[in-house]
Image (tube, rainbow, N blue to C red; front, side):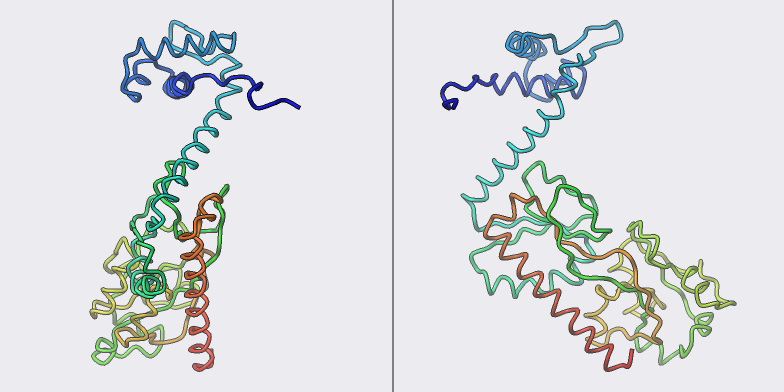
Length: 318
């Protein structure tokens, strides 16, 4: 059996970094700018690596640099190795700073569902500081800066641990004060109301807008295209709660306002959608105690939320 000290010595990390950057840019100058070194230093590192492997890594052509076949073959594995190194470094940092848990979530989910519950987690786990970033962009876990994310989508997130938290339905909602002024007893009465539109960029074809919702129920005489539009689900819910009109709302996000009486469902016409809310994180991050604790807490909160909805719906005869 080969002993560890007999294994082939690895090439210098700086040479590998220079090669990866140069291969990505196909330009030594841009690689040098990224690495904060001179183009000559990048060229020297590439030469060192070529001497080490005994083969050329780049072809110099009149149109610029091209990768050799050997470089093209090795590059994906090298990039994966750098991702693993970044992941390992983030785990070391997290192990040292076990108080911090960093996560991202969509702004509407963070504001309407997650943040109102976070106090309970903090009480149960005072040793953990939650750093929450709300944004629509998909986080790059390879940087190691984020431990986990809560995503609204299809559930297909390759290379990550994926746990479904909550399903979603869409329901019409309005403020009780608005309905006192202008009755809404059946869908046809929507012609006398302003329709509020959720324009959040979810890309879920199963989530109905007003035109789809009205067409599915064969309702005529209501213009499903008119009315204000908002780019976040939380904004359209707030607009409805403030009496601006009738909204088609994601029920998970609107439920707290329904429970408090700020919103009511004027008639039962819910639509289940394909997308759901998922917790996702790299497998290695799942070994961190703060991630384990937060995932278990999220699952318990989600189960309690959906159980409460079932009780409400059964009580209403739905």
